[in-house]
Length: 388
Ligand SMILES: Cc1ncc(COP(=O)(O)O)c(C=O)c1O
Image (tube, protein in one colour):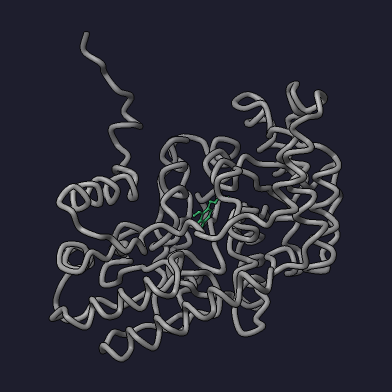
């Protein structure tokens, strides 16, 4: 039988990391010892009390049945309390908080709730690839907002043509940013609220890295901007905050109508989040002051080591205030892909070519600080031997 795929599958580019994984496997087969700075997956373990809570909760037969779609009220209350404590933002746990199977799941589903075929969605470039693909799945058209160094890697909202803004349904933003590591201040979020009101665009702020920040810097929630809760939703994740990428737990907060509409889509797709994992999430949000200082100090040391080492090699990069990414200018006349291929093939270093995050990422590569210091030192030594 000829298996004919849907157009939406044919149209999507291969998932960025799937392609890199294939290349990595090929190099490993050749016996290369790889230092993988490709994917932002924390290498440190989940704190023990969170694991203990899961173990205990897994024994409870109450949790063996279908969970509630929107998440246990106890989990949503823990989220609301954490928001109050961390950002000074008040949320109604019953109507303004929704559990997610990781923030990726919510980001992937939100266009289905608001985008009709032919609608435009404003998507940052470079950006987390799911914004673009989820837009395409809903039949929408992404309009890319370039993130440039000169504007602090913030989108220039005033440059969006009025005709585009008027037909846009969603605006994705993400600070601290993946892949550029840029951060946003309140004045930018206020500008976003004004833009959203003017053009009736729903704002989707991805705050997955809000708790990975250095030198005492505290990233803001979009919800801290006045009026944000009327125009938007914010996606959070326990993945990076508590080293829980494998657990698949996140949440969305914000405008009750936007939150409940996303919930309606999810009701028809998934059946919620294993309640024992939600209990572990409650433990994490209640027990720990975020950011977790011991985790942050490890990333901070890695950041310092790499920024210094890379700059000494003549590479150009900003010292990030947040996220665990380094956004590095490609030297000379090479493309992002050529430079990433050189690093992989000649030094066994996996980095992500910036154009994989969108055309405006061309000219950069991204490195993730998710390997230990000794391997990072080794990476710098290997880079010293390369001629670029
Ligand atoms: C910007 C951004 N948003 C969302 C996610 C998804 O995180 P999770 O689904 O683990 O919550 C990631 C993961 O790398 C990310 O980089």
